[in-house]
Length: 333
Ligand code: ATP
Ligand code: MG
Image (cartoon, rainbow, N blue to C red):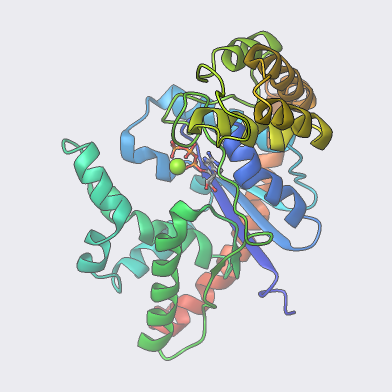
């Protein structure tokens, strides 16, 4: 493989603290990939501006998320960890890609149509061109692999369209076409503890990586269940299935097997199952929380990580932009 084929890129929006869904759906894969690939991971602070966060909230979120990335095992020595707004080349590429992106294809994006329904009072141009900025994030490093959840597949398809169109328009081969990366076929979707749907920052139903044991216990003990199985071997309803899904991720296989057997034989006590689950979630998250607490207020360390990430990201971005400008004919006179 050439270095370009090995380049991986992914980011997380700075919209709030990270939860178990972000960990098992994204971060855990980021940690594995940094061992084998040339990885760029970033905090997508520009992307979070579509909802106009208060400046101090935005700033604190960016700092927290860098600390959460590192606490979860991202190693700034093994990958390039940076903040999106530290790399102005991304904005330049965004402007240039806007010239080849058609409003029709952007208006047809499912996430855009969703936003029109959900926040009719704030349909800003940033929301419409969100996929162009995302394509710029990826193409600026000419990344080949993008580990993202299923929700991002359509945006990634647009990134491929823009890469191809740029190459065709300017008769060059500056950009490779990026593809979704996942380990095996089963993309994990971590459910919330409220019975239905996925765990999400905006859903407010998350177990956060930095929750204290006391908070974890409260959240898990309050999780929705039902009155219990009435017949042997019946299919559990969604809220109970969700508890098993989370247990599969954090508990020992024999523990999960024990509670499945209890469910199948109608002798399950949800209180016991939740106590076990709460304990296993705590065990899983304790090292992450401890590491996070150690570094989150160490401004000198986090500042150094961000500065080193910025240097490496800008060096790679500058190389791409030299090629891009040359292809378009934007050269110094
Ligand atoms: P928001 O509610 O602001 O959209 P989010 O919780 O959905 O936040 P994102 O920043 O959109 O988080 O996503 C970051 C990464 O985490 C993405 O790769 C996404 O696919 C993954 N992810 C988010 N929630 C889950 C989940 N419940 N299960 C698995 N992966 C998830
Ligand atoms: Mg999301």
